[in-house]
Image (cartoon, rainbow, N blue to C red; front, top):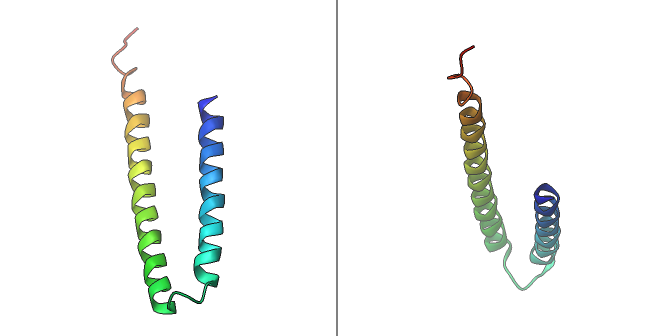
Length: 73
């Protein structure tokens, strides 16, 4: 159930981000250079968050495998 909730939250966030980017790049009130700079910053932050999440996922998976190595038959 938690996986479904995370998928729905992530999907909703991506849709909202898509609508924001569509508005942000379509408006003529903000200069093009500033829009490109903001987009680069947002993409960089998203990449850092994704890498941090992936690293935590790998550490958790490694710990799960190591827990059962101590059991001997």
